[in-house]
Amino acid sequence: MSQETGTTMLNLLQRPRRNRKHPAIRAFVRETTLAPEHLIYPLFVHAGEDDVPIASMPGCARLSQRGLLAEVEAARAVGVDIIALFPAVAEGLKTPDGREAWNPNGLVPNTIKALKDRWPDLVIVTDVALDPYNSDGHDGIVAPDGRILNDETVEALCNQALCQARAGADIVAPSDMMDGRVQALREALDGEGFIDVSILAYTAKYASGFYGPFRDALDSAPKSGDKKTYQMDPANAREAMREAELDEVEGADILMVKPAGPYLDILAALRRATSLPLAAYQVSGEYAMLKAACERGWLDEKRVVLESLLGIRRAGADVIFTYFARQAAEWLVASSRR
Ligand code: PBG
Image 1: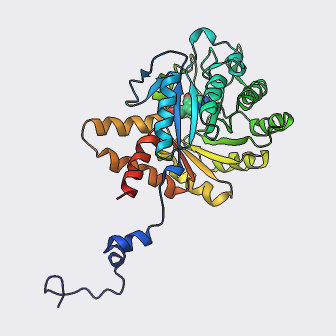
Image 2 (image 1 turned 60 degrees about the horizontal axis):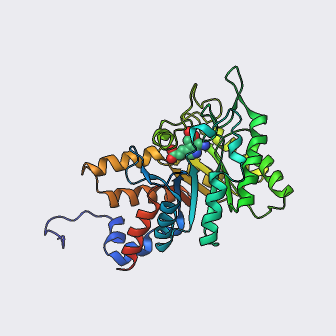
């Protein structure tokens, strides 16, 4: 007789549900954790006085300096101590060589200084790539025939990263996908004594449709062509292993997979292949998808956001770039106070 229903009992030796029967048991069999220290908060900044909402990313804005300081304060209050800066640069400052990227009085260096004045212990990640500064909207310098010039771009990226390091960046994050840029950045940084500035390499950055809202946010979409000659083909997994080996020998401190959700297999494979810490970027399009469904009441925002982040952690990410960082940390802190 079954104790449940009084009818026949299956003769099972294995009943996995026994390990799910009580919250305290579920708590110790839980394999993956998600906490505010696993989150990096990407923030958009511009030189304007107002915060300008980004239509395709509800809840995100191009922040003024004042808006940025308020947002960082709120994020730190819930334990998010790492931010990544993305500048929306005035069209008039964009040139074919992207030289505004290493203007010592540019938006990014000035913003870093303002943040560090207020919070010397805030960890600041900067993006190394020319697209916000390049009049062609590409991460690299575009030749007259349309090719993206690798080695010339790498030299420009070194100028950019040095400018960021001099202003106080803690981690530089090349998102450009040029060959050899990690080693060149390491040598350039070390050459000026910035031995403690970390390199977080966008190792497996795919040519993804999920970057659309980000390019709206920064007005940084390519003016012609696409990014397929430098970003990776979404069909490829082995190639990510090759990129990882190169970034590792070139001196990267942390490897990243981007986007995150559609590329969890890449993250899991990299987790097995390297001993370096791994990051994943839940990109603008992943954010927009979740937001759009939640705004319509089709999904429960708190549940699906935390589940999407836990899934990325479970696949192997030590740290996650997410536009939900502040909100997710608020939820996590509130539920840990229970
Ligand atoms: C560009 C860069 C992009 C993102 C981060 N850095 C866009 C691109 O490669 O076109 C995308 C981030 C996102 O979609 O959230 N260097």
